Structures are given as structure tokens and as C-alpha cells.
Length: 92
Image (cartoon, rainbow, N blue to C red; front, side):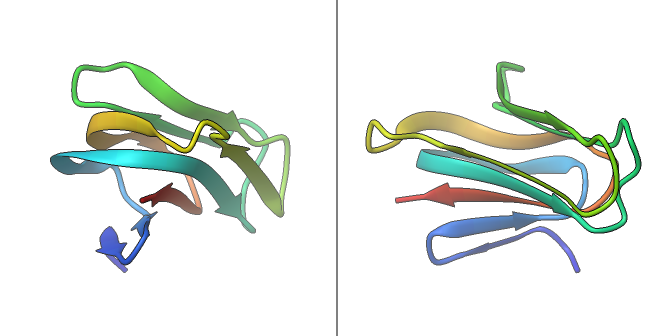
């Protein structure tokens, strides 16, 4: 599967610049059933600012971050690192 943007969520499974557009991001989630200790998901903006970084400690890894302020505007979403699994970026 390739990176996809559907209503309210970006489903990201490969390293790439996903969009240059600005989104009001409300949360992140990293899921990897096949993760090994040290596998990582890092999401940045196109300027390189890290917005989410999760490092797995073993298999069946899941980590999430919710933004409770109603969302943060992020200009340009980039998957900087994705060793295994899928990262979800939720937006309004």
C-alpha cells in the first residue's frame, strides 16, 4: 500500500514527503505488529521540525499522541523515518 490521505487521516507506510499543504493535526499513531526493538516512526514538517517520534521496544508496538488543543497547524507533513509498520496522522 502507498501513503494515502483519506477523510480525516493520513495512512503512511513509506518514507516520503506526503504533502506540502498545511493541516490542522489532532494526533499521531504508530502501529507495527512486526516491530523489533529500535524500529522507529518519525514525522516532521518539511522544514525538519519533529512533531512525532516513537521508538519501538518490541513486537506488537503501538504508540499514540493526541493533541488536546483542538489541533496544531503543521505545514508540510513528511515521514522522515519509518522502519516498520504504519503511522497515522489525524487532522481536521
